[in-house]
Image (tube, rainbow over all chains, first blue to last red; front, side, top):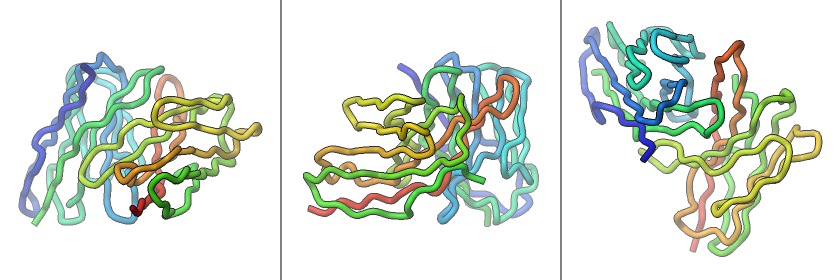
Length: 111
Length: 113
């Protein structure tokens, strides 16, 4: 069954902390995406990737790095977390034909 | 930077047929129209998509204007579990083989008994 799994589901860190959010898809999809969702803004694209080693900048990339280590795994890195990065983060995967599939989300709080 | 425009909210009553509009006046010829819905604390769930022709599935009917500048998601006989934020998005070709998915704020559909 097609799936996008995010971990952790919840994370609390302090300002200046180092955080890695993980996303794994088992759908053999080429595209993977990281979004953040905040009240009043909808889902905003941070980074996305077309295959292992590929990285594309999204619409709100500042303060975030990402790495696509394999076709299955896409990581979002916050190296100096700030309170403005407190948000709900979603990962998604897709191919050229099928509709994108989303994970359940990671709730991040930066204190 | 969203390329779609939707009303912020709509209200309905159980059993009604709901029409959710979406404007995408600058859509390109090869961009697909996708609809997702999302309930609190969960990821967006795929509803339907289309390119030019109207489409239907077990969840909804998608009506696409002949000029493709707008579309309407039609939900027949809504129930309380249809209450959600409905997102109309375009699959944007950002160049080469890369396809961005850009969301707007969506329409919050409330359903009352």
